[in-house]
Image (tube, rainbow, N blue to C red; front, top):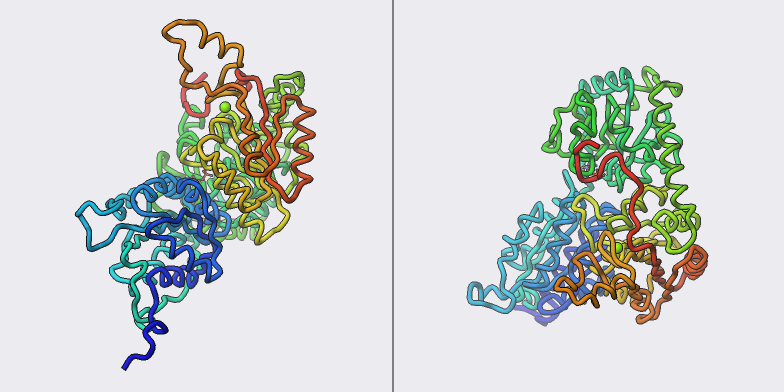
Length: 574
Ligand code: ADP
Ligand code: MG
């Protein structure tokens, strides 16, 4: 009865690719090998962009950043066993950040289960801790169903990571084309709104606030709530504070941005509205001494289980941030209200901002080498294009860089995030560059790395050069983790002949020429020690829109942050 078999049959690999295509997946990052090579080839032939990387962890970071930037999950494709294990770091990071992501892992032959098959590992179970959804289709025919469910789960409710396991024997197995039904692309996430009575209560608490503060988190960035939040800020003349990746939802240079008085604003606000920001370590748990014991929190979040964590909120607004902000705006349209611009609260905040900004500028004015962090970042900020992506990681590099480098657009800052992950930078930069290439050609990506942070995924420089992505990597090099030694001290230690004459745990090799890594693959590399060299190399790197560059910026190995009222990670008082 059957005609030519080859025309009626389709491989498992092609079914995976077609199912992803049907769900509008545009980008796959991964590393091929047994058994997933055919999946990557099939995906490419359907027009899905496949970006081969050098470590699954970086590939997974890249795929997750695509999810955050586009609102549709990127895919990370990995081989069985160790390939999948390497990707777990990326899955965990995505899930902690509430970013959508699909990981597809090849796995060993089902007929050899429990026999010690090649790279055999309980992958579906292993992924469960790092994801919202983890499953293996029961047959090739079930692949489209599971992939649709994974994609839908990754973007509905609180976004997160999802895992789909594809056994090796499925990849090349042929089934009747007609037996495979592709599930239609899932609908965009439904938009939920807060209870009307809760919106009334929230508006009245805001109206009665003496020292109000809006905190804008990366949930607001992900929700594309920039227009409504900006309107609320301007209409009600409220001070706002972005979290690290909430930067740019409302531009950092907006007059109502109180970032430069962050600690002060948190410490004395009597009403705080949280727009997609959790009261975790980044916001010091919402507890004293970083906050007033009687501060009233108004929490806006899409995830009901988040509401009330660590602090009992005055009112909770469960729903989509953009929709809920519009509900709040309606209240202030009906009965207009403004927070008085001449209040003592504004005066306190402005004064603190002024003195903090002056202290940073003072440090930045030291231009004799070796440079400090502030000198470096002030010189970088001067040249940054307004619409560039800023990717950043490292300890001091990220923390100080965040206070100086400005974001003017939403979803244009990517950093170590909720999980504090080092090693994300190059993967994030690659994702941003690939997305920019398609949606906004010419846009630049500046990847600001500590020397230690750079090391985690440094070989992705080859990926950057192979794909010809004009990313600019700045390695702010202090010869170590937190701090290092200059080469003189280093030599003294090694030559001291004492038992302790080993490299201290925080030290990395002094004066490492990281720029040579970029040169090795055909990009431009610069080694700079003075502000003039930094200015010149950055100018050249920005002018060259065809090539990636790496600027290795030597700074004082013992350089530190300016004095802080509170250390970021501790809640103890002065
Ligand atoms: P930050 O690190 O910037 O403080 P978090 O990652 O802690 O931000 O918080 C982001 C919050 O945003 C999460 O609790 C998540 O559930 C929420 N969220 C994500 N998307 C939406 C949305 N569309 N509407 C409302 N809340 C959202
Ligand atoms: Mg360092």
